[in-house]
Length: 82
Image (cartoon, rainbow, N blue to C red):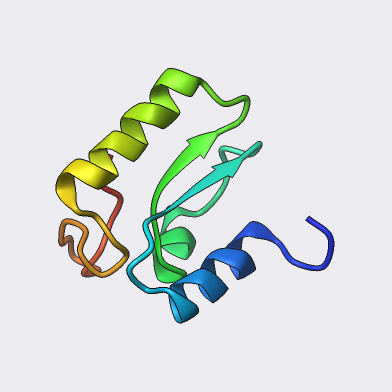
């Protein structure tokens, strides 16, 4: 994305619409999940996207009512739903 990376976009979305469930898609599996949760992401999926896996993550987010502030608690307070 020109001018902004996915982490900055997730951070902005979490700031202006904190009820939004954010699932990051990336071509790199080396993404630090702690950084993702810190900016409000509830899950991560690696590219190339497997549509069935993506839909399952979206369905799980809806079914659990997951939002950045309403995911399962872990030692850091939040972690991925999936």
